[in-house]
Image (tube, rainbow, N blue to C red; front, top):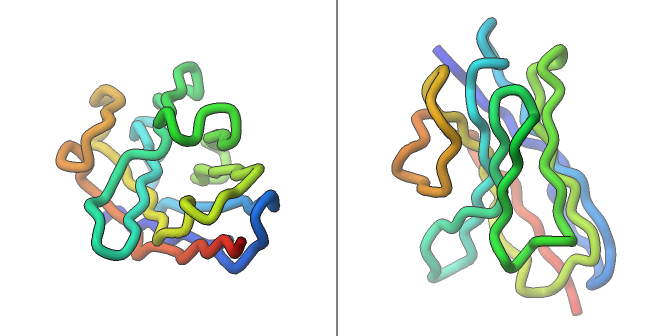
Length: 125
């Protein structure tokens, strides 16, 4: 059973920074492409960032390019999302997700098999 636990959310002023972490249980973390998604009230869940298994390829939504950075530490079974220059429109519940082992990276939430419980990020103006 694969379990994902996010942390690092909170309240921050516009222009500030947060770093989200997601620890993944299991011995094959390095084989899972990982992604971060977010969902604001009344909106659909949307892709934020994705990373391939060996930290070679990263992908970002246009709305966060240049401000957010995704990274992974396979030795710690952890994926991170560094969020800088935060804006009020970044306010949402942020979820980390894992695809099946040895599958490709995806921008579609429907193609992720495992999800964390989410962590709230609130950016005040």
